[in-house]
Image 1 (cartoon, rainbow, N blue to C red):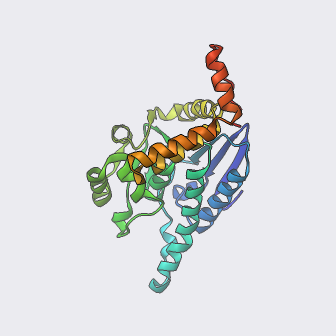
Image 2: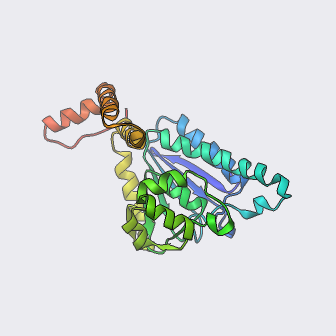
Image 3: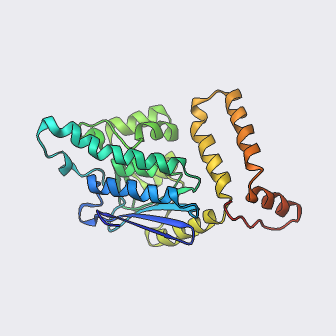
Length: 261
């Protein structure tokens, strides 16, 4: 793929890389469109068992490309929608698919870059990563689901502090706040990401999907409703080959060999 983004699917792992290093992978409209195309391709490929998002060069993503908005003020709203609509559609796909999605981040993780990282199921960061809400710095309010994910990750009061003040957050603080799951030395980020992806790609993919959807929707349901959804998801999962293998492996006291079906 082109337009500032590449997609590779190999051995059950889909790799999306943002490739506009000259502008720290700032997202423009062609990149947003390419991201949506990539996510649609992943959604259609039943062999995908893990997804990773990375950035080329010195940063994961330094937000949206502000050149997008260098238009007459009457056209600014349309320009914003042209960028945001495909980004939101892409993130909706990644949230819904069975395969776990990992953000592997380094350098600047700002604005839309922070949104994308938070929208992933898991995030691993290099120790040089720096997170910034950034939107309020330009008089904007946020996109890419960040106003949904951020308060769920850090709580409302901390989310308001992060969003209103837009102070930079270093990697250790991001780990403490729960913005990422792990922090590793920058030189080890690629290897540690590969280890995580290999583990996820060998897991029970369909069960992962049910877990993702149950957890993401839990804030919108009451206790009894959530248990009803759990029951139905569990019952549906008993018909999968992975469930049969998991139970058999447990009874036979061996490691399971999941196939994602």
